[in-house]
Length: 404
Ligand SMILES: Nc1nc2c(ncn2[C@@H]2O[C@H](COP(=O)(O)OP(=O)(O)OP(=O)(O)O)[C@@H](O)[C@H]2O)c(=O)[nH]1
Ligand SMILES: [Mg+2]
Image 1 (tube, protein in one colour):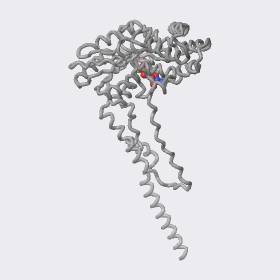
Image 2: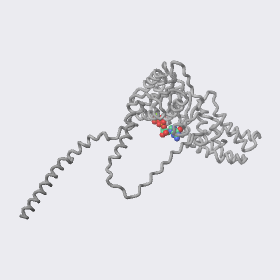
Image 3: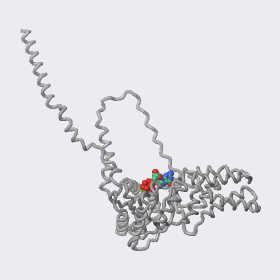
């Protein structure tokens, strides 16, 4: 009897276990189905990158970017809280506020070239004028890329004034040197950027120069400055040589809160600039800043292309009021060779000398100004959005010779 009960009990247990197993096997997601179910979770895929959404500020393109954080935050709580950590929680990394970038000044950004003059300057300050003083002055001027001829002429004139006892002390010689450099930087034309603002027309500033000199960066900085000055800006991505060029300009447009007109890679830059001008007139923008490609591999093409862009940009309602040639000061005397090629192609109205920060070749400003006779209007003192300054010869010379 007992054995019968035992057998019955075992049968019941086996049956119950079999039932449970059967029910479980129907509920659990089997391995073959996982792929498809996971496929349904594409919603959880990271949203398209904001950068790839393009530089134009269309709200439709901006929308996915805003969703991104929401997805991340909903995903976090779904993680199973299975392993409550026994370890002490790691201390939150201290969130230090980013230090505000130091405002660009000639003094703060011309450190390297200042260093070149420091030896000669301190010997002058001590009152001495001897053979060593002249040698170190000459060396500093040449190393700073003022140019051999200009440096020799400058020192010759100062020497004759010392010989004639017009200049008696080292400090007088230092200030005479400053005055002489300022005189070399003098130009009859205004250094102000020209904006006509004729009703019914749109001012166009073309930015030209060889590869990598800082054209696009300068446009980005200019867009910000000119917007702050009250202009309504439209950017024209006239560098169609490579797609990344328009993307880069698009990022600056976004940063500066301005719009951009861009076309297909390899497209006709004149058409893009003209389109930008027409759209600017229709939308009420008063200033178009046009980027251009910097290749110089085929000079004839470059000359023809630049001429065409300028001609078409100047068609009604466009009014080209600036053709800014960007030169990289770190390339020293090479910048002069480039400048000559560009001035043959278009009527350059102003020079932008970039990368004056961190280079020993600040004296190139003098050479460029002397030899080209075109006013240096702007200087780039860094890569940040506010690191573009109107060229101020007095502040420049003071910073160069430590007179500030
Ligand atoms: N330190 C420093 N870097 C600069 C300055 N201006 C531009 N740059 C840097 O120079 C590099 C080239 O600048 P771009 O604006 O791309 O030059 P680009 O002339 O448009 O070049 P392409 O489009 O290739 O012809 C970038 O890394 C910039 O950040 C400046 O004033 N100072
Ligand atoms: Mg560029």
